[in-house]
Length: 218
Image (cartoon, rainbow, N blue to C red; front, side, top):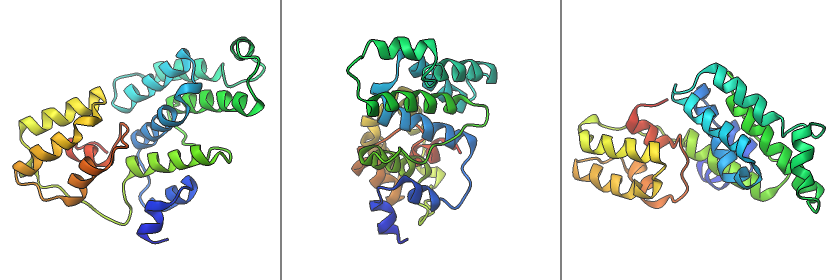
């Protein structure tokens, strides 16, 4: 696969297969959370959404393994079609198609697996083209381009740019990334891949490869 083919690819399995270096648990966890937010957020109930939030805190060492296991079990209550929680929730949506019911289960399952001590990443969305395309985008956003090795000179980062990057990361203020690019360029940053990613790419999730590079997160 060429770089252009990888960038244009809508098959998440093929996109992930090109990632040469084994991702860290943090990256896997955040990629799973990104998929939950971008693909399944509308299918997730409050308890399962909270599981995603726990997983994100686990990624940054702000939630314990015990909290993760509790969140895993809470989300998976909605993934089991025979559980009381699942039947109660689905009963509220009698006109759901079988495909929508499956999406409901799949969303809860993925939210739960993001909380597992050794997080699991689903690399397919069961044939749904739109979801597959979004999953491939999340993978590119979190794991970065395997055909390039962007580097960053620390002298183009000052306390102000680091503080802005941390704000964007924690508050999910991805709309401010072009502002961060401008501030970095004023400090002499010439890392074209990073600056272009912040300015030209409107699709971002927590775990963004370029933002992680600035914050020294792996």
